[in-house]
Length: 273
Picture 1 (cartoon, rainbow, N blue to C red):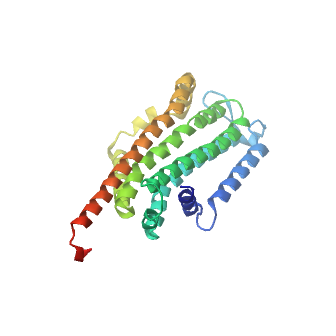
Picture 2: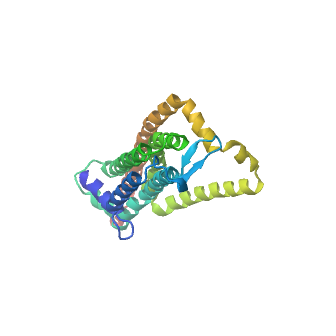
Picture 3: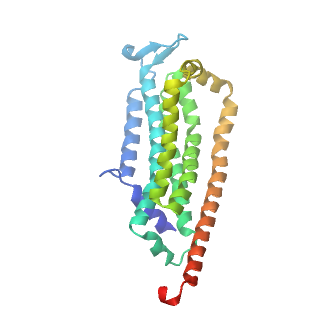
């Protein structure tokens, strides 16, 4: 199992000609160094402003908060592309046939994919917490600091959502192959895109102005801080149950397909085998 996990790690540990592990390490150290060099408590007049409530806002804090949000979204997109990557390389190198000849459990290949994505989500969640702690520790007290704390509280939700997407995509890519699974994925994304475009052209855009308010959302989260924390902590547990259910479903259908293939070969005449 360890060899299968390492194989998947090598498959994704490179973006163009840069190793992902080194890139994450450099970005994390760079972010922490900049955060320490430019704390939000520094009274730099060029970066000070006031919000609608008259509170002092340091634009430096806003920059680091946006960087934290972009990092979390980028990690989510990165993990979403890994499912296709690890299955594509296995199909290209005919790894599945080689693994079936090894003395491993019948579901070892499928389990390795699910374990790899779960471990990746945990590692990225830990790195995101490092970014979040660095952002909050040097923030000026006020709305930006509250927003940074709330965003940090949603890190488990982001990790759970990445596993939720993996729980949907892994059965498709493992059972159907990359080409068919990508067709389904692209069709679903296009459906969402057409829905958004339709709303922009024919929907009530004033609804967005009335209901999408970041400051109001921050105040709402502060009011129900305990409830938000409970949901944030419990959501990964719920997703893990769904994730395990996805694994069992994938193993069941993979076993059925293998059994049907063996039955088909037995039914063939000896000369056709």
